[in-house]
Length: 604
Image 1 (tube, rainbow, N blue to C red):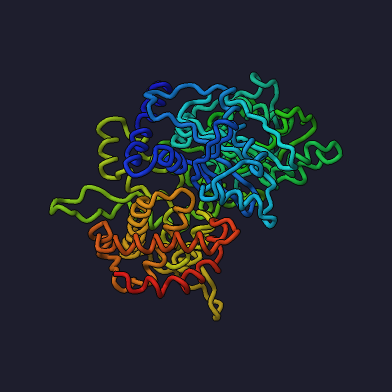
Image 2: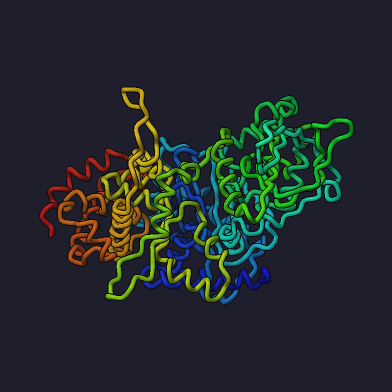
């Protein structure tokens, strides 16, 4: 299939998903929610829809990451009537990004209705206890940005500014994570007039050894690495667990600062842990008169699976004109000697995930990525592929939930099948509306179990607590007798009850949507679900929810009343605080239980 045809097909399918959601949400909300499925947002954006055309100001959503001290302002560039994605020029993109920049620079002088959802962001910006070290402007567009050149913005304050662009082509890349990386052929000698030398790691001398890889270690020129990344871009790090993220955070700022400092940059190889990479094959020749030193001329299917942000930071420094001569990066290269008999793709995926898990010590990696291969996650994936949804019409079951253990897994699985009958059958067996990722599972679980403040902190925090809550299924622990306790078995019953909790959360979400909230919808959903369980746990049978695949409509009015009370409480109790920041505190949940629990107890 041609790239043009592939993009059009993907675009049509994505727009169909958005239009389906537009039956219960505004078009821009549906667009935002769809795009968020494909990116690694540490905090759920709050939809505010703020426009001031006369001032050329726009902010559609925002989020604040407490750990990174990063404020993200979202701009939505969505045309629901476009039959084919049109091009977004660099000038138009910069104009969009500047709308958010103007808001940040001028918010204190903009006259705003006190009831507008944007006021919650204003409170956050006026809160002296909130530190902002970085401003990220993220543009979501259903057009495509052909030039792919970075947009530079500056603000008077001492704040780092970054512009992220998620166009339709980048979303397509995420859904095709590992499909095209094998086609990368990099000829360092002819394309860059450089090679690099690595030492071969000897295999065990045991003649029975049957290793299916060759491993090399050494270093690569930072300048060469930057040039290769400049040519291949995200395709070079598609298998990295932090794929598609640009240089960000304190670690990466430190990398750039080191490279800028002439007296410090020679220490880069000492300070930095380097990169780990894999390739299918390559032209690797023994160096003259040295049987253990090899010169790398070219590589096929080269992928940096650990050190993607190091690579992005070096590239960023290169684009800024920083001299990278005499700067070197530690490198480990693994050549996978696999055949079709080894089930090449599965074997490679397993090795890549293990390298990502065990090699990373330098950059923050999402817990949800690192723990994707635990027995607990693998068991949930197994049940989702084997347990059919109970039939509701006395006919045989036709579909299952699809638990996505790794981000983008559903689309990769779909695209491995031939278009037409095979993909149609896959979608029938695993409808997209029954797609569930591990982070959403965690947030749904924690809200039902009475930790809505944890769910409000975002997916990664919820996932960390979720895994700790369920550690008996995956984490070996030593008892008082110094003996390792056996792991508990993940059963089909446990899987079904987890899905039931998701079904309840999704029902609450549908009913909360009827309130037409803009700023606090996610928090209202989490707190409403938690209160529903607190008050009526004994009356809600999770197995019945699984069997019927829906929460009985007898609870609809109860949920609506709880949701309305929840909204009022969050608004009133926050005072001068940002509501979403207040909702993240355990004190908020405890106060909510105390003040609203008794009032809501008899609603039935």
